Length: 464
Image 1 (cartoon, one colour):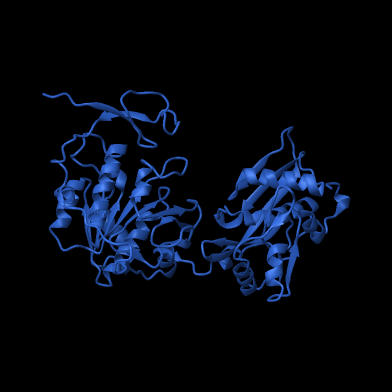
Image 2 (cartoon, rainbow, N blue to C red; image 1 turned 120 degrees about the horizontal axis):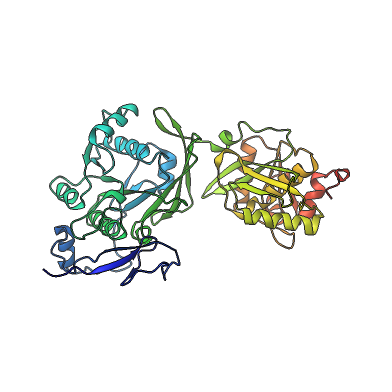
């Protein structure tokens, strides 16, 4: 019998080597290389669908062709349609990932039920649950009466054979890609080789027709999508679920979308009967804020094309140890260190003997630099013990020179704050020039020193 060739595959980046080593030479990660059996070079064991694609002559077309835009599968969730760019594109591949228990299967079962009620056939394939378990969950979500086709299978060859013997469905949901395997390779389910080949076969199914394929992916302990990163390049859209297990709010974020904008978000609330869209997240996140508490500032941010207002909370207290503590939830701790350094250099505020705690209320995570001004205002308020005006909002990027740089979509931020009843807008001078004619309540500042003067810090506290 011919000996099978061994190979060593990195579980992080998918690179293949002929020998084992402690660290991958491609991604420099330690202890990620696993031994496996190299796949056969012959394509005879692949599914007939892939073999057929290999034999068809490649069709050429012009860039300015008369191709019609692909139709979309539109759900009853307006925010979800916005995140996907107007609905799921037929013939596309979507990767949905997130921590365990965040609600991926719940959301997809609700989507399947919604589309099936619109006479769009949907196939839901689970490799983790039995059909009975899916039916019990559907009953709890009040979607048991929908016409969704269920299957419990982990072999990709069997799945594709079953799909080719039935009328093409509008959508196929596979939960999850890490549980699938194919006979084409001799490797355990969940390995890089199995995940990559199984994804390729399902994506080929989507591209060969008008069936939208949704793949559910697991995440690693540090929050990254499990499996080789090439899967994120192969699919058309990557949706990521965020949220804490103890919190009822869930955030669905578009990390990649070939058919729409990226960084769009959709916010859900987890209830007993499933996930419910939150149409006005700013009101939800600001509903329980303390208006007269020092250290609280309102940030007018942007998530994709949607403006959203969030509460920034900070607490600055004298340290009990030799090394002051810096704790951040929902923001970048390195950017906090930069803001503290700028405040010390240009405002004379020294926090070297104080612990600094920063939190974005509601479990939200901020990544845009425009939050710098709200963070600085919150820190100054906590240090001085002076509560900020409850009718004020802040946004703007703070540079290392102490200058406040303008932010994009300033008019939308101010409009959202005005809709929620705020009457004072502390913004960069660069945005003030274009907004002062439209709104007399805006106040522009050039440097972080102007912000300190605006807040009127109490210098008798001894921090300045």
